[in-house]
Image (cartoon, rainbow, N blue to C red; front, side):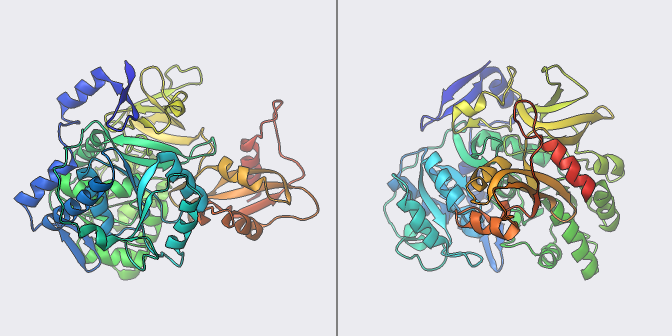
Length: 539
């Protein structure tokens, strides 16, 4: 029976005593945390390189030393359970920050560096962040100046730490390592919240997904068992470390699975192939565009990536032909599809048998990591229905417990909002999404959030944003607009309007269709499936 339980900071987490006991008995959950793993690695294998960031390499000793000093600085400022945010690209400092938060018993809160004022202000206030780590600027955007504006609008703003570049009146990252005062840090509770990630939903505002030390530990152990991982393997991490995938490969796997991570600050396919070859990387995971472009770049470089053992593709629609093409070209790698979410990461196990290309290409993996059931509209089990999942790696709740009422059933299964069907008994195929989410280049876009903002556009009377298949990005966002007058908004005007309101660029629609009216049902709800069908037929 699932009940509410409070962690060290008073956050309400979902707790099922029977299932927790089972997770502990099976070893999915343990009575220690990543803090213990870091301390052990610093003693047992101090010189083993865990992080490669360009020319910078961090050993277990380096990470432990730096994270310990930073943890002291955090503990001197905030109580255990406080939220520490970071809005950084794939830099080695982020691993130090994440591990320092672990040592200090804080909650890590990764934020996409591409987000702007609108999302950032909401998240920092919603999660009550006490400290945020940022770059002075990134990709031409003055992040530190943006934070000046954001914190000025918050009643309890976080302390702002600038990691690289001019601190501009904020705290300079190196100064946090200067204190000589030390205190004994209490060990974190493995069942307490250790990370909060925001994910887009259909209600407009993002939801804060809470994971415990143990839910992430269970995920890493499952990956270790099912993804051909051996000590000494190397993961190329090109996906943002502010996503659940990037974070676990970069922060957790090196300590729990004995791997090394190679970080990419910015995606560029030719550079990725060079890193894969130079560092003899064995594992790579990413959304569809990463695989498409890596395959093209490998051909251009005339390499079949002989060291690559596994390419895991997910996060967006994955064409079966792409899996077949990549599996045929790469010399050794298993190329497979997987399915999951921030709430239940890695819900399916990828097919890791190179001889079983049919299931690797044509399905989204097999059950085995999470307990999966398909439910019809009335909740009954079905061969085709809404995908519902639970497991020791699932979230322990949302920041706001009221958000949980509609997403869990009586048995504790998470309602994914995705439509799936079983193939050959144990293989899952995702047939579509019940939830109205657009996934572009692996980034989740909640149409309602953007629609609500664009309804303030002076030339828009009505709007519906739908996702359409796109061979390059997986999906593209199309804004179907009923104009208010003679003026007809275009992509450029929507972009200008949204960017002026601090909306991330990846959320701006890439296509506009003008209509006299939107199709609606008797209750006045816009029939987006009709819009998609019409636009797909016209393309």
